[in-house]
Image (cartoon, rainbow, N blue to C red; front, side, top):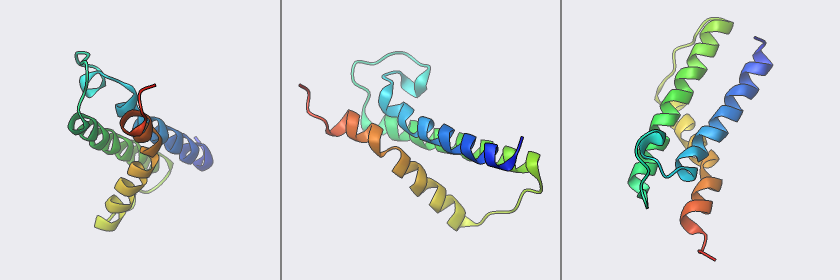
Amino acid sequence: MSLDLAVYLLIVLALVGANLPFLSQRVLLIGPRRQDKGLGWRLLELLILAGLTTALGFALEAQIGQRHPQGWSFYAVVLCLFLTFAFPGFVWRQLRRPG
């Protein structure tokens, strides 16, 4: 897999993964369907999916070449980027008025 393809794949998966908690009413995306899943569940799912996306990024990096150690600032940037990616789903679920 080329470096460009890996980067684009990871960005697309991060965009989809960041919005999944706001599109699904299931607990942890596979559990029972709830009438109204609270914001706490959605944020927990968002953190879990951010961790899975980061792990996938590490795996792709290791497959392509040498994996570099990361400091705390890398994880802060990844979390902020994931929260930015989740903004459309958050607006759609939490801020829109029922019509």
